[in-house]
Image (cartoon, rainbow over all chains, first blue to last red; front, side):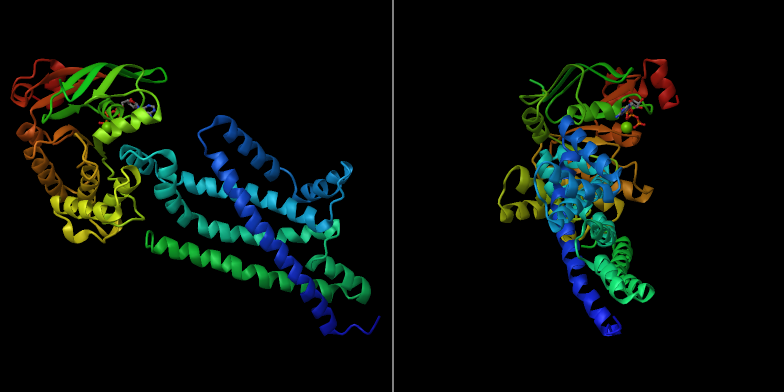
Amino acid sequence: MGQFTFFDILRNLLIATQWTVILSLVSFVGGGIVGGLVLFARISQSGWLRNLARGYIELLQGTPLLMQLFLAFFGLALFGVAVPAWLAAGLALILWTAAFLGEIWRGCVEAVPRGQWEASSSLGMGYLQQMRYVILPQALRVAIPPTVGFSVQVVKGTALTSIIGFIELTRAGTVVTNATYQPFLVYGLVALIYFCLCWPLSKASQVLERKLNVAHSHH
Amino acid sequence: MSLIAITDVRKSFGQNEVLKGIDIDVERGEVIAIIGKSGSGKSTLLRCINGLETIDAGSIAVGRAQLLPGEAALRALRLKVGMIFQQFNLFPHLTAGRNVMLSQMVVKKTPKVQAEAVARKMLERVGLAEKFDAYPDELSGGQQQRVAIARALAMEPMALLCDEITSALDPELVSEVLAVVKELVAEGMTLLMVTHEMRFARDVCSRVVFMHQGRVHEIGPPEHVFANPKTPELRQFLGV
Ligand SMILES: Nc1ncnc2c1ncn2[C@@H]1O[C@H](COP(=O)(O)OP(=O)(O)OP(=O)(O)O)[C@@H](O)[C@H]1O
Ligand SMILES: [Mg+2]
């Protein structure tokens, strides 16, 4: 198999990288939407909704992502639902991301001082109005850096989906290694590609955090 | 009929009974100073009147709105009394003008143009017409507190509750806020204010309430309460 040139290897890896990026985006956006629901349940005034959301978060944060992937892939198959790897991967990652984002955002909402709730109640606003016009706009500013920061975890999390057979960057690395017998080179490139995806995100998170701290409330 | 009728109000936090049966009737246009040691329940009383705390027993009525459980009743009550806080609690993500406009638009559904006109008028009333576009963190504490007053006034409350509204201010900024309060008094606003500014209380208040351990320990016109305290607790509090 000596006919694999360096550029063949790189090309194969980059093609698979597309799937890593797509899966990351789907997980992040989907996880963001579900995470928004988790957030609202977690801070709602209804006790059972709050508990449900807390249970959900604890369950997903307290088990390895790999197990969640296995359960989505093999578990649903047990019920006679044949789940393709991409679907199981997307589903598990969305639910996993939602748990973390929901919890991050809850912290941001709770970081808004109590006085903001009191001032807005004393002006006659109802719960949803307070949320919409007073609390969430402030929570959002605080939420941006950790949310962008968490996207790095999502990108790295997609690597695990290789184990259930979804062909993304890590999986492609394995396949190419088996063909070329150059694990150090291949996995080195794989790591480098992950780094190129993740580093800008964590850098952006840091820059945003510093910016928001300096400009405090501008605007 | 009095504007605010507080009748035998009781409030506990767990085992700690903070208000032990408060009776105060406030007439329209009255200015009431509430004084007392830390922990005597002054803030809790104001918060109950505004519905920020629920009461365990007794009743509070403002105009015709009773403090009943339930969001609708609470809102009806809150629309009649405004509250000013020690820490200003302006919305930091909105300009001064927007701070004053928001609740008009959201709660009263006032159209934007009209809300803005009211906001400009209210800011002018507290001497901050030129700060309409300034964000709270660009204002001094005294200016922030005056915006907070304008924000409360924009809802056209029948009475204002003020909880130590000058306590968080640098000494040189206290007088500008008190000047605004004085003007409100001159215009006939009904005020209940927790304050440590004894001279101010003596000058502008119609009555002074001395609270002690969750009760109204003494109440009366300032000249009586300050010049002629009847109980040893008040005498000790006043340091005479
Ligand atoms: N949310 C709360 N939970 C539990 N206890 C509370 C709460 N709010 C107030 N208390 C207690 O109620 C008592 C009265 O508090 P309050 O704030 O009304 O006093 P205050 O007269 O305003 O004092 P200060 O002059 O220090 O502001 C205090 O013992 C306080 O610890
Ligand atoms: Mg107090």
